Length: 165
Length: 419
Image (tube, rainbow over all chains, first blue to last red; front, top):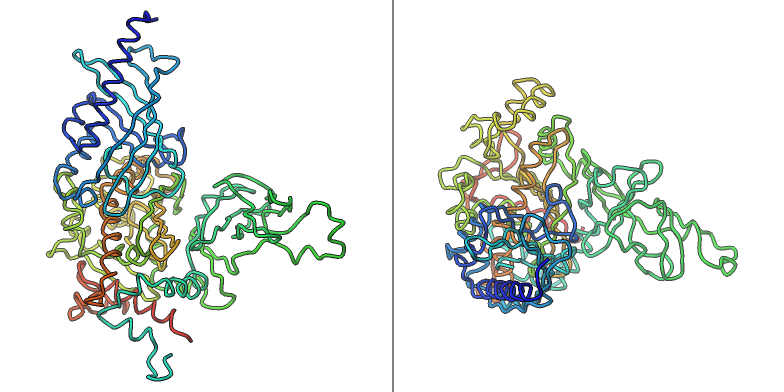
């Protein structure tokens, strides 16, 4: 159990980390965003609910670390037409909470809500999600070991989601 | 028919090597397509494996109409319209489940899962009413081919087998990828919406001209063998089966490689279980050929696209509003193959897919593009001079030729013109 003081320090570090991640995503700083991941990172955007088994059922994104790198490399080519030109993005991150029942391996389970405004060639699109993270201290820095993005409308037909969510 | 000129408007809009841009954007044409294509011809609805047990149901669609596919207690598959026969309320609001009956929440009318009206609230107000006249609407004809369930709202017309014609053989080829000879649709669907006309999707599925350009970003960074299949030197073919069905036949390239499972970028050694089961099921020689040839790349008009490792179902909602429902193909008796099929499918398709995000971007840009009316035409003449007939009499061309689009539009015109 953390003391109140160290808990406040941790929350402050986590909040800064999540805001930074959001800014890197909004500003398409792909390589800097990729550096936020641990070597075993998993990036998961489920479809058709929050609790599907991603090993059995289709997800919108279910990237292991090498596929995260591939996703970033595709964006970096400048010929991924769905992001050429890039979407204009701004997102709000809020409701940041440490989860009940922290993992006993030292990872930090944290959740937030996000609301993303995307302006693309198609139109303006509003995205809303619950984000669940496992963060880990690596060499004194916070890193993402997993990020699960539960889109509010992931059971419906959604438009192309080619920016980093 | 235009009484003044004797020329059908469709003849003016659809020519052998070009079609008019308004075919993609005119709301009246979209309404006419619903009537003459979606609500008349055979349309793919769902797969029998999605309702494996008695009383299972899954909600599907035909165009904008919601259709409940049920397996009733007798084991029969029904296609019921999701519309109460009383005041039109939708009777089913869940995507799937197991239910003997559906009760409308509005006035508590209850329908059996074969569509019969079994009861209504306060029945004394309906004295003398014949309940059999108030069943749920049904898709008029329902037939299935190797587990793929199709529906047609026309009481008469070609049988499903006649409609599939030469393309039925592609489904035969597909199911042989399973050692048990069966496809299973069990991995759930991604639903990818595009602000574009459905025919941009339909025509792109067997367009072998675009991959080298639209998908250059992923071919450049992934160790993909797909790019070469669609190059100028490729021996792969485009094929028009008639009735709007089209194919990209990659077998000539895979046969040159002569390596089992190369079609899926893997090898027999990496799939020992699967390889053993295939050899037991089909014998060494036939199994080897199946595993060299791979699965088909075929667009069954108007909405079922089998894309080697995944299946797309195209749904038009409006003239510029379409949904691609997509899932990994799964083959009965092939768990090690199925896992890889799911992983590959998740990477490549759906709203965030490495391939489909760019295809869908093209659909939307094309739709906005054709709102400009100079030139008025979409030019589809590629390979017209070099197309030929194959040994079965189907038109084939180079993999990058527009044989499929021309085939689709020839059939489209037949359906749209007054008989």
